[in-house]
Image (cartoon, rainbow, N blue to C red; front, side, top):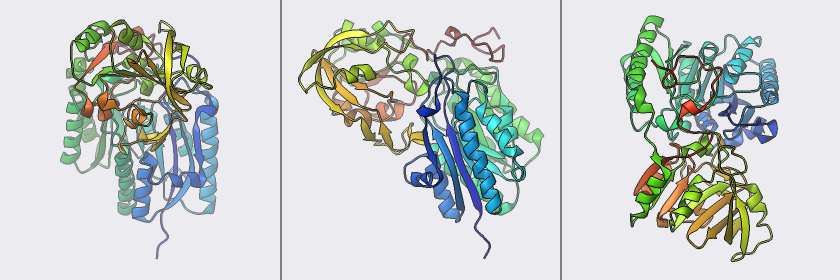
Amino acid sequence: MANAPRILLAGIFHETHTFVSGTTPLSAFAIRRGRELLDRAGDGSSIDGFLQVARDEGWTVVPVADYQTSPSATLEHEVIEAFWSDLAAGVKQALAEGPLDGIWLALHGAGVSTESEDIEGALLGRLRAIPGVADLPVFGSFDLHANFTDAMSAHADVLVGYRENPHIDARDTAVRSARLLARCLREGVRPHMLSRRVPVIWPPTGTGTAVSPMKDLEERARAIEAENPDIWAVSIIGGFAFSDVRDAGVSFCLATTGDDDTAHAALDSLADIAIRLRDLGQPREWDLDAALAEIKAKTDGPWIIIEPADNIGGGAAGDCTSVLRGLLRHGIENAAVMIADPEAVAALADARPGEERTLQIGGKLTPQDPGPVELTVKLVSKSDGNFDLEDMNSHMIASLGRHIRMGPSAVVTVDDRITILLNSEKTAPADLGQLRSQGIIPAKMSVIAVKGAVAHRRAYDPIARGSYIVDTPGPCSSDLTMLSYTRLRRPIHPLDPT
């Protein structure tokens, strides 16, 4: 009997917002090494998806390292060197112990460090330079909000992007990618990749796949795959607009065993759609006071106030106060707000339920925000902030897995009208378990404020009477003209006349 194929497994996952101050250190990362990666089986993550295929195919998995943290500021380059040290050592050791048959990577695709604006492309290039790796198939999955580069396509055989935003298919994408690796090994044929960028950049609010323009692009991508069996995978990449890098923005990639002329024609057809529908990637946003005035006149709920400028899933601090101030100003009742503020949580450390305290809430980490709101609040409850995602296809499960840690948390109320969930660690509002685990029943609220762009839809749309995307100050504003790009290729729509 032939030996089982040996496949090396590793991953690094970070969406880098280069316009927020500070840097993201190595200590911010959850790092798993060796057999700890195998423990991710069943947690719903991308790595879990790969492990399923490995079991199905009878592969011997060589687990190396998995680095992940939430979206945040530019990475300290120490992070990249630490990951590379683990990866290079793991690859060399694996090759010394016997033949490797392939490498599979769980990536994001929008990582930026203090020394590299394309960490994934740089790492893939280094990987290919290790003796014995040049002839190995390198496959993987990546996030729809990657900023895809030529280096990424040049140094990988097949990288497959998520098809859905919210990212309900992260695990499925990993499964699809790993099955393509199995096909490569079975057929003995290695694809190659081509990529294309268009002069268009969309904020995250414009990259939801349920509506145009992303819906049209995804439909065309599936048609290309169906029309040409030589094209193994086509990925539509919405891009991550909050990274000031040359290749930020809308792009496409495909993996093919066919001729390049056919592949380029397929990419041309996608570029034509993106340019034709480019204005649809700039959705309308409400004035906050106009939205709240309209909501106040309604009697049912819950109504969702979406604050993309403080989008935790985009790298914001999650501590902006504009919506909280608006709820107070309009006298909105039965409302829920989530704010990341470890200082406010700590100030309640010795408080008992029912006790009142005056706190400075929010506005401490975001320069665009008016600053903290001083409120006298009543403590409802405290917890360690741990909860399990209720939805195994939640947007946030791709990298974090099912078990979420918000850090020490507290629920407080203001005049019994507004409920505030205070977290020590910012947590994207992508699963109703976040509120329910803290005793807040979303379906019973009249108004819920979420700090997101699109990821919340999977959780909140099914319970909502309607939603309002509001224009507020913050680092993830949908108005990209507010950002001072210096490295982005120009001209590009909508920043420049085209």
